[in-house]
Length: 141
Figure 1: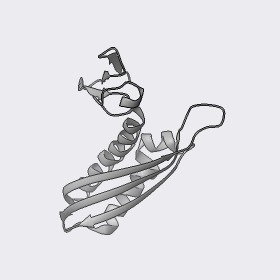
Figure 2: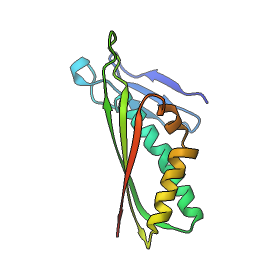
Figure 3: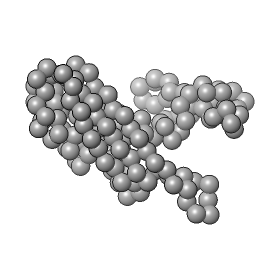
Figure 4: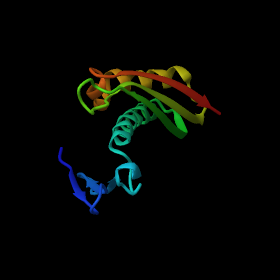
């Protein structure tokens, strides 16, 4: 896998692209001189984790003939400063899955989430040695 990150302005705005050639914008906060022209790098990590799991879950539920009409994930991460550094990695992350659908089977939804967390999502594997990842689910409709 390969990505390219290109500086857009003379501050902290970057444009990133990968194999799909879709551009993602990343920027620093105004407090450090950024312009709010993109997501923060640490937000992007949570988005990567959530989207990795989302793709798994939708694929699994489609195979089980579950009709999902709306799907959202709220990711909430807590960071702690490492002693002697300026680094603040995630130590806990909660993914709250919110699904709507036609007659969704709660057991199938739970199983799809668990399979993503434990077997399929590479982003989860990336975090599991440094952050405790939990999840919760709401099925609406």
